[in-house]
Length: 317
Ligand SMILES: Nc1ncnc2c1ncn2[C@@H]1O[C@H](COP(=O)(O)OP(=O)(O)OP(=O)(O)O)[C@@H](O)[C@H]1O
Ligand SMILES: [Mg+2]
Image (tube, rainbow, N blue to C red; front, side):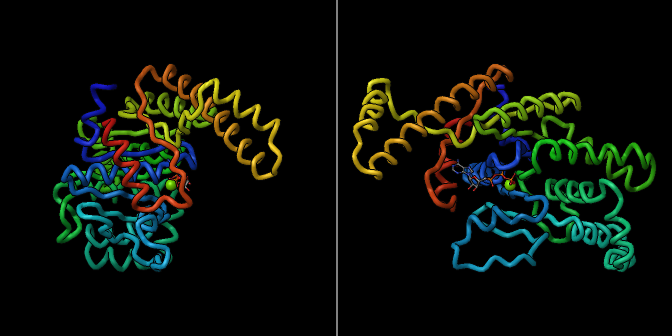
């Protein structure tokens, strides 16, 4: 694992996944910053139109219109983002593949509704667009290639599902353009020199369980995690003597504010202790080294906080 981690950013396509809410979008963006700092033309891809990445870079006064999906937006020098909407991905696919007829089909409500109702079609279209972004020769006319495509993938279960979609379609369709496309994408995903997988977890019981399950699910598809990032780690602030001091102070505290502050300090320490235990369990379960990111004490993770997380990642990669 340690041997592979330095090569992570050499892979053109990186999927970042993990349990819901553990910081996938945050880590994908921080990883994007690291990649861009290395001079790689990088795009962070959000699936399912969340536009979280883009919004983190906007000051709250800036409006965040939702009508720019499937547009590659430059966030910082060399760092782009796109939010993939399957409907628009389908229209683009048909336009590129089949010219004006496809375009007419793509804009046909009935056809659209029909295609979108096909199980897995949304996932196939989304991952097809991801694949397109990672190609040296972009299908999209005039589009410049990326050195690095970092996918802010859906939560673990769905994330693995989406990775399987191309192969499933290839197997079902067997022949024809969808089977061909499915096979091409599946081959790309299976190529360890091209595609990497990063799991994000918080050091808590459920996210740790889910990360271990994710490792197993990937192994079932002959895929492997390149890096596991434990996000939002609390600092170890107090030694034993200080803890005793804090507990004594709490017994003696006269004011509600004083008591609240002392309780907050002690409860943060308790959470940190649980994190240490859970991280040890994860480390043991995976049998590999982990990367760590600190909990950032800030109302909102905007550009400066993301740069800070990128600094931490850079030190460990
Ligand atoms: N290291 C951190 N320190 C402090 N807050 C963090 C950290 N990482 C993420 N957060 C915050 O936690 C919340 C969830 O993070 P994020 O949106 O990146 O998670 P996610 O895994 O992408 O969630 P979802 O599953 O909903 O897509 C956000 O409010 C984010 O700002
Ligand atoms: Mg997210």
